[in-house]
Image 1: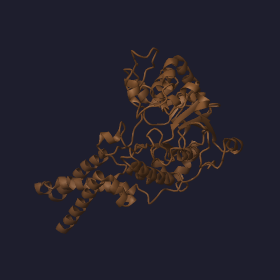
Image 2: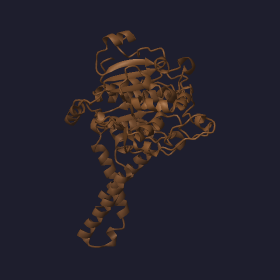
Image 3: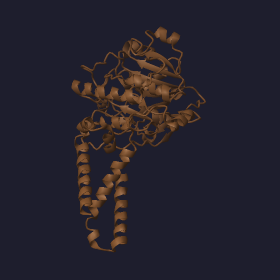
Image 4: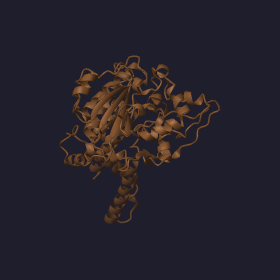
Length: 447
């Protein structure tokens, strides 16, 4: 009896120490420990789940003690230790039972096969995807800024679209001029791509010169908000399209109704219902309402005719945004200099409420996955790490996602390069590309 309790206590102590180490030194934990153990301690369980287990463990222990020995205080006194032990054991075993020995084979899960067949249903209207991309000239990372760094994300984002969103008609890559074909395409020129690129979905490469109405005065531009407000000018773009940043990666099959209703209304996060008016004493034109925070870093569905109506109604505002060729960090200084809150130029934060108010969008709650335990706000910027948003402070979440069965992964994940030094950026790039190859190893038709 006592030997058993000593063994249990030792096991309990080891689990607690490893758990503490995983939280205090997550980078070292990921590097030193086996992947299955990493998943265990950064598993899917929230602390609410574990708290419930603690209460259940306490109840079971007390009932067993009373049933066997009656109501005796001697069996209640070590209750707290045993309850905590049960809680950690449950947390540990749940992580082990839900981890995989490696990356699951795309064809090995019969549930995934059934899910894929359900996703192939064609929408009743064409849907395109638009990526904005700075190009590959920044690859290699030396001297990059957070606005233009490229770590190969687009290749894997495109793979995700091809494999998991087969209902997409065409992918448009809106990029800096010149309109060169990415180096990892099997087509060497735009002419080759247009002539021989017959796979599905189709791929088109468009430059800012094709979309900015006043290229002589508005280009060159590295300001993402300015570029976003030209997407409606992309040639041959469908009336319904989804705007993707190149760091947003699809991870599992998804139906078109994730982004549009069968009636063609955009499906947006409930944030758009919280729009507030904008007022400025220095800007001499009407301003649209905006949501008072950053829209979730998600694919953003857009109804093109409504976007054009917005641009016409707020032409002065849109012209001001397009004429701002660059920004620093989040661009807040551009807003505060005119007495506006931040963000004030984000297309999601202004066009989203406009579509909702004009009955061209519906909303649904956006629920983030379990957040990281890291507590440094300055390192997390304005977002929190989760299994849907990852940055340099939480690389362990990439391993967590890779070890999940595909059907348990999030629909998309954003891996944001927030590195501030060349050394950090190079480390982040390696981690990202290892992760990408593990979750999306199959090439697209144009590679």
